[in-house]
Image (cartoon, rainbow, N blue to C red; front, top):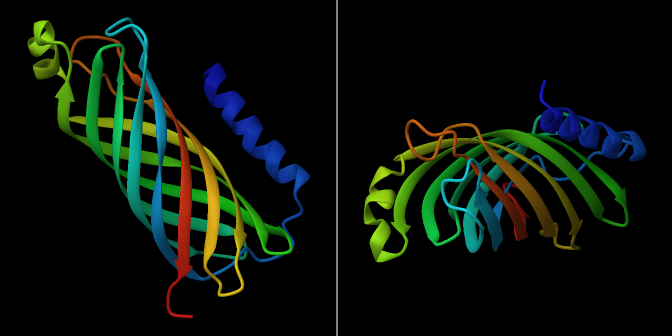
Length: 193
């Protein structure tokens, strides 16, 4: 297991060791929207530097047991590095643990797997061939932490911090992979309750 994976696993365990998981988290089924900012880079020196971008999407989730949550998302997300911005349609499947803390406040830690399909690539005119060489799909490993509050009408609002580590190369025959931080605002509502 790599140092990054060990750190992520220890982070998740630490969060849930410090929060008692006695209270059920919230709605049995839920959906909503998310929007925020991304900060991305490409490891391996393909395009040096970092790049700011955006993300927006929809999600659907279900509480599988007292605190286990399964969530499906469809997101538009900008990744890249330096002078290159690559837009993707990203489809994460997430598994997490959530707990009510007090007064409608909840915390959720999650991880999963995401498959993304390239929508566009923009860079300087001199690098048109670089954009053409960016692969059409990408696998990544998201891990995140969400802190939110359930409102009186059972809708909820949350702030989500996510790190996604690329599992596949951005360009064939290179060791270049996206590493992306996301900070998102989430608005959700229960379904069928």
